[in-house]
Image (cartoon, rainbow, N blue to C red):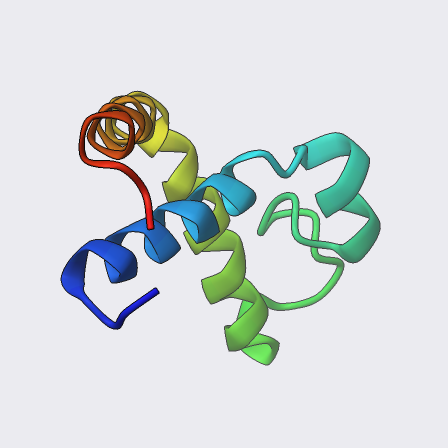
Length: 83
């Protein structure tokens, strides 16, 4: 596997898929990453945690584009042959 834009795209797609499947109630609430309002402290005290919560919430809006990117990636891999 060489270092190319296609491989960087696939790696980013895999990371986005892994973040997208995290369940809010089962996984994220155990670690305090489910909601900014339920942190139990002032959000300005933990700016990194607030940014992580914002990223996890923003990725939830990418469901349909990620599904389309997965389909395109699968088709290209089938037609061109993955290496």
